[in-house]
Length: 97
Image (cartoon, rainbow, N blue to C red; front, side, top):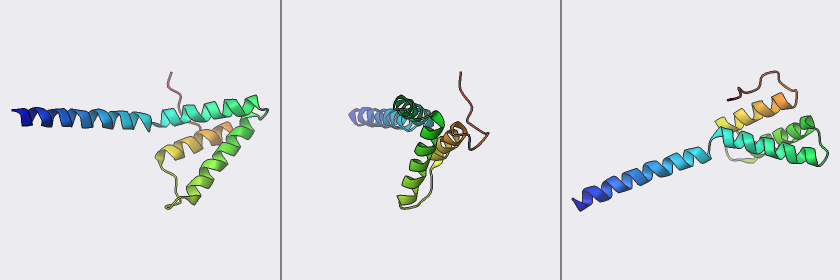
């Protein structure tokens, strides 16, 4: 009986940790971080377009330095959003309101 309880507790703990990990890896959090970084850049005198271009360049450069050299799904979403903000692409991401 105790072993069953320990097994159930372990399974529930693993599920909770997986939900927390997925929540912390969501693209929405990363998009909000990008917006915050652009707001800080604007405070220092950069335009939204310039800040988005520089952040986009940094994301792409870091991906190029990594082992596989390609962007993951969240990075692709971020780059598309930054391209739209920098007026490099007419297609942005949908807003949830």
